[in-house]
Length: 295
Image (cartoon, rainbow, N blue to C red; front, side):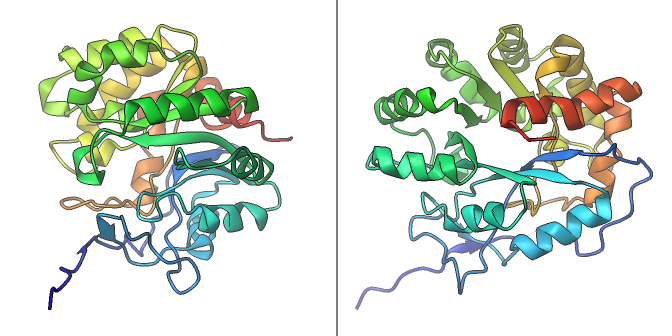
């Protein structure tokens, strides 16, 4: 009888969130975070490459209270696949404080997309990274983008540095708002002159491209407090201050080396920019505009 190998697990988030020294301005938005389960209510998808410890909406609210964060964008995690119910449940109980980004399949109907839209979803995410399944079907991806564009949605791409190089031409053809996760996951030890980061900067000169200055713990090669990621964020902010977002990436799926403390991640913001007006633009104004939060 065939046996099924257990799925890879991942580390839980740091339970001892430090109170950050940086005081986030009112209506700060965590523009990149996830909901995991709880799996007895929202089972993990059979196609997931990993099974994380539960980190549901209540745990996320606790974190945001500790950090002084009032708004959030829940990015559908690959462990839930195209089953967006956990995300939609969190949005529905947030009193307008949460928006969402879904994972979709070509089999979704127009009614499915409309329900997601009415549930607070503003975008669709595609993973290109190898550990989450690799390159999506580009034809199906293009078809989905054509269907959601009339809803005013945007595209989020989760890529590694090599994907920016490999798919530069494909990404150049996409005619809608595009948001890049985790600064394109460019490795810090290769410096800001590396080809992938230069491609990302060329994209960021276009008015429809956005980038999240999060994931410092993913691109760092020196470890906490991840200061080697600061020059990358600084260059992106200088280039396109009106199209930069920030997020925690809580609960930090598939971190294998340095599980970050979310207080430390928020304290990177004043290192990215010491200008309070620019901090407010990144943390409040930019996400409010892209995700259409109501004042």
